[in-house]
Image 1 (cartoon, rainbow, N blue to C red):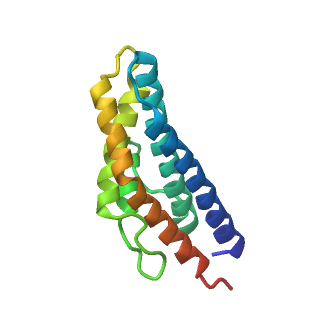
Image 2 (image 1 turned 90 degrees about the vertical axis):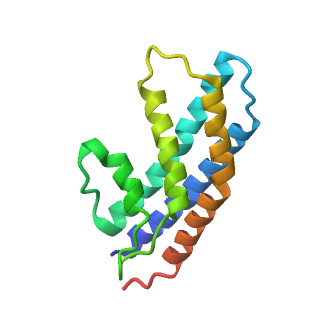
Length: 156
């Protein structure tokens, strides 16, 4: 593994953490009472998941030379794979708790992306908001723990 790849990944994760924090603040502050605000909240929840997935993709690219998942279950398998330690390669990236949280947000994102003729149910959007807010700090800590691992890698 090249030192530049590790340094890029480290900086990428730190930048994504900032993005996730900013998105979380928007999610926290948005109180949907109208259809437009509900759609905006759904959009930020979608972005939260996308940002998290981008981190996992980059980690996988560096440590495992890209994914080996079928298109059918790519996103779910990417999340699941992040819960595994790869001995002598990398530690677990996310806990089972974060996997379950992100998987629920993934399911919501899928609905949001493919619901062209569908009105979002405000209560369901609020439930996903609560899910993000309740799990954000654990997920963020896991990302920070992974950056500590990256910081300690000895690269020749």
